[in-house]
Each structure stands twice: as C-alpha cells, then as structure tokens.
Image (cartoon, rainbow, N blue to C red):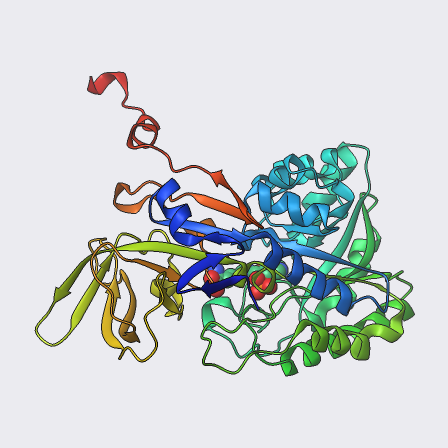
Length: 422
Ligand code: LLP
C-alpha cells in the first residue's frame, strides 16, 4: 500500500498534486511519502511486538537524511554499510546504540569512526576482519560488540545479483565453520560476542528461504550456547520483497514474516533485529519524469523521457520492472498504447521497458515510475554529465526539497584541472 493515488484524474503524493511538485522543482525528480515510510516501518515494528526487538532500516536503500530522521524519530535503528552511512545516520540524530554496522569490507578507519561515535554492534563477516576489529578496539581501549554473519547456504530464489546466502557468495562465514570462528572470537580481548547475523538476499517473494535460514540460525544458537557463548541477539537481515507490478501477486506481508521469526527463533529468548530496506522505502517513492519526444521507429514507438538509467538504474542493471503511469490519468475506456520507454543516455541499455502497454501520452506529459523509493536515488550517478536529480519529501499537504538539483556550474566546478594543463 502507498499514498500515491489519483484524485479527479490527477496523481497525488499524499495531499499534494505531483504536477505541482514538477512545476516547482522541474523534472526528473524523486518524491517520497512520509505516511508510507512510517506505515511500513510500523508494520515491521508491530510484527515483532511479541518480543524484544529493533527494526534497523537498511540505509543503503534510501539514505537521505530527512528520511533517516523521520524513521529515527519513529523509533527505527539503522543498518549501515560504510563510514559515510554511519555519519549520515549520526547527522540525522540517530544515536550510536541504534546503529548496526554491516558489510564485507569495513576498513580500520570506518571501525574507528564507529567505535568512537558509538555503535550497537558490528556484524563481522570474516576472520581477517575480526582480527582488524580486535586490534582497532584494543587501540582505543574499547571492547566492540559483535555478531558474526553466517552464510547458511540457502537459495533465496531471487535475482542472482542480489542473492547473498549461497556458499558461492562473498558474504559471511560458512555456517559449517561457525563454531570454530566463534571460539576464535571469544579469545580476542577487543571483541565481545553477543549474537549471530544472517542475511540471505533481497527482493525475496517467498517465506520458505527465510524459514530455512532461520532454522539453521536457531540450531547454531543452541550449539554456540552449549560451547559457552552468550548469544543474546539475533540479527536476521532484510530482504522481504515488494510487489513491483500492481498486476502481480503480492509477496508475504511483514505480519507473516514476524510470525515466521517467532516460530523459528522466538523460543530462544534473544533480542531480535531485522534490517529491512526495500519494504520500507520501495513503495514510498516515485520517480517523476517528462516525455521529451514520442518517436516512431520502424515497428515500434519510443517514449523518450528526460529521466534515464543514471537516475534509476534498476531496469538496466537487474531487468527490473517498474510500473510507469501517466500523472494525468487517462479517461476510463482509453485504449492502451504500446511503447519502448527509454532515456536520453547514449547506450541501448538506457531502456526502462520494452513493448510496455500504458495509456497514450504525448510530449511534455509527466509520467511516474512506481516503487522507485528503494535503490533509486542512492544508485544514481551523473553519467553523461546529467546532474543528480532532486529528492522531495511530502508530508500531508506540504512538501520540501530534501536534496536540491545541482546546477551545471556546481557539477562542473567539482573537477580540478591541474596547473600543468593550464
Ligand atoms: N542487510 C544487508 C546485510 C543487506 O546486504 C541488504 C541489502 C539489506 C539488509 C536490505 O535488503 P532489502 O530489505 O532492501 O531487500 N540494489 C539492489 C538491491 C541490493 C540489496 C543489497 N543488500 C536492487 O535495486 O534491487
């Protein structure tokens, strides 16, 4: 569910007409709904209400500070994967004891930053990382709380580029070696083992892979406790998928996911952490773009938009589907047109959809990409020297630009030409 609906034929973001935002900020742009973000966070929080828990928003999916602040104010923790995300979370007012640090390649500098600023836990992914973290913590006279990410060798049944829980993936340590690695960690004076971490992939549309992974985590918890470790926290990762096409069957709801967690690991008495990104932010955002030209090819029509792959890379990178709808609703009974929907970037991969049926549109009309809140703005670039597009946050009948569009001058001024070339 989201808060982008038609009213009298015009698409609204909550109580603001999308066309009004377009007139104020120009196109293309991202727009996020406060109500949707809060609602999706709340669904997870409620789904885990049966026990001690913290929902840590995976900031990598949408990291604008305004969004982080509003979720932080609602009680969310943050899952960060870089020094930059850590500092962003802090800048948005999230306390260190609600920030978990994930990622397969944390550097000593990033570890130092997080220990000095305060951290809930590090999710450690390898022995070499463990050794470095132990040294960094000791050099600061600190003891770093850790979980160890285990790779349960479970098929997440999702796109290969976003599956992380199979043995061939670079993430975590093989679950078969976990006891050995925990024993090693327990001997390190700079570390305090507090739990287990697992994350098997993203955009999962079934619960079965989660169930398989969490059952393995439950079994491991008991083994590790028998080995003498105090396992008090389980970080169960993110990954619950969203319906990208309104016509598709919807993936399981957070409620079912929360019940699954209770069923598989609830009896262990651990504090539960989860790290959802996409389900909180995905359907909370649109990318709005304008039709520049409708061009007739030999056997097809191209809709050429002012948004491109550098603004929303998911279709080019993962063959992802996003529903694309006109901002002015077509009158009932209008027969659909069929388009190849593309951006202006100079490569054929800059294609959002092929042979897509949608109501007919013409030059200067606005279209909206649904489900663009997660992994949209954060993955954008300035390829083809196209300035990063702005982000807008709506709350009820008010909206604010939360990241402005850089001017061409801003963008060009970032390069330095060395004196020897002058
Ligand atoms: N925790 C960890 C350790 C992760 O690696 C991820 C996502 C998450 C949590 C959040 O997963 P989510 O709930 O958002 O599925 N760019 C890709 C998705 C990459 C996901 C990477 N890791 C896309 O656009 O589909």
